Amino acid sequence: MGGLRGSDVAYYSTSNGILTDAYISDHKYTISEDLVQDWELMESTITEDGYIIIEAVRSLYTGDTNHDWNITDNSDFYHPGHKLYFSWGDTAFISQRFHIKALSNINLFGSKKI
Image 1 (cartoon, rainbow, N blue to C red):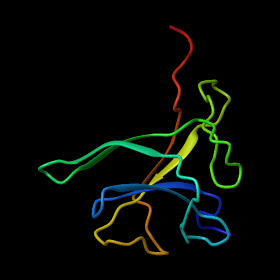
Image 2 (cartoon, helix red, strand yellow; image 1 turned 90 degrees about the vertical axis):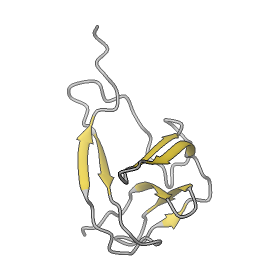
Image 3 (cartoon, rainbow, N blue to C red; image 1 turned 60 degrees about the vertical axis):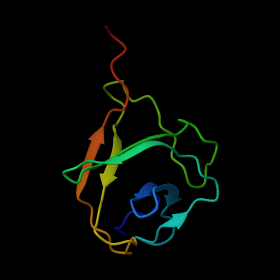
Image 4 (cartoon, rainbow, N blue to C red; image 1 turned 180 degrees about the vertical axis):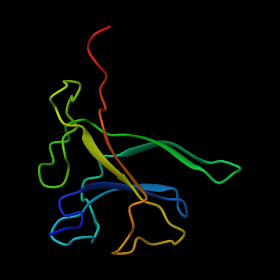
């Protein structure tokens, strides 16, 4: 198989300042725009040294069982982390063969113990 089939995607374009909710379904790398835009861009900036920083929010459970993954509490040691992939480029379009620049398997929730 391979590819990113089944991925829940959000991407930001610096050319127009728009954050888009999308997904990858049947094809390995073809990104399709979600009909329901669940992400809300709160703030974006490009620093003097070229870093792109965005802040966005989305409900943990969107109700979209076709294209959105629920963001679940994974603070339990035995609960797997959420897989996050990051990619960026210098073109105004997303190619079908974008390259993952960074990836992480992280816990989005902290421990319940103080």
